[in-house]
Length: 235
Ligand code: NAP
Image (cartoon, rainbow, N blue to C red; front, side, top):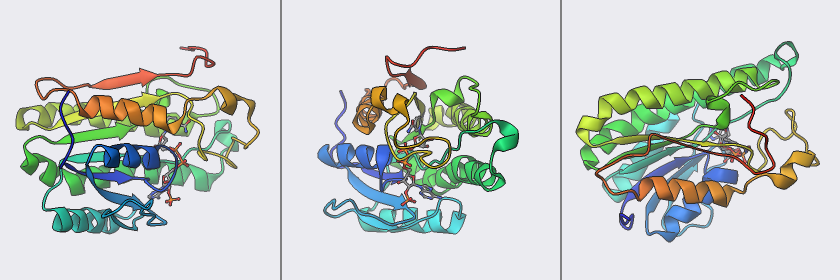
């Protein structure tokens, strides 16, 4: 198992849910952090660089990455996690939710990678981890646009692997099923959605991210997929 101590990571969507769990797990491993979210929360992590950053705005993403590199002198890991979801049949989806899912999940990933990649290449041992979803591997009813955005993430990250393997940057898709967070609450999920009870925790996902990042550098995890025992395996 490779050590992560002393590495520098940027995590997007770090203020809550999976992103916050990943940030805390990396902090425990001695990773120094740049944290991106609209609220700019630093999670109380000592020494973290945190500033308001909407991943829909390429300039804000560039600024967060630049501030992190300026502070720590390098960047080794990017965890592209910021994401939103809305559940409804296609014609029932709120048009604003459609725009937001494409802008945050797809463009936000592209902006994050564009800002981080030169530094990951310079690191010589870079890692991009995209927090995609089972919805990036299978089509689910009431998740048409969310699935479209997550298939886009998976496809982009897989294709990028071919460009970057030779320069020592690993690109991994982490594809969880249901995770109990604020995700999509008010947009098709409610706090009393019964399925939430059986879902995985953000820490479960963070553990998988640590697994991906700590593989020896002689190999890379292209994709991990995992689902709560309470979820059937459709498709
Ligand atoms: P969450 O609890 O709602 O947290 C979303 C995070 O993203 C928050 O930190 C939020 O912070 C940030 N965010 C939202 N819009 C943003 C924007 N425009 N710019 C920057 N940050 C933004 O959701 P989650 O469940 O942790 O989801 C995280 C990722 O996991 C998403 O990509 C999601 O698709 C994926 N995922 C979730 C599940 C699930 O069931 N929960 C399953 C599989 C995959 P601010 O509000 O402060 O900006």
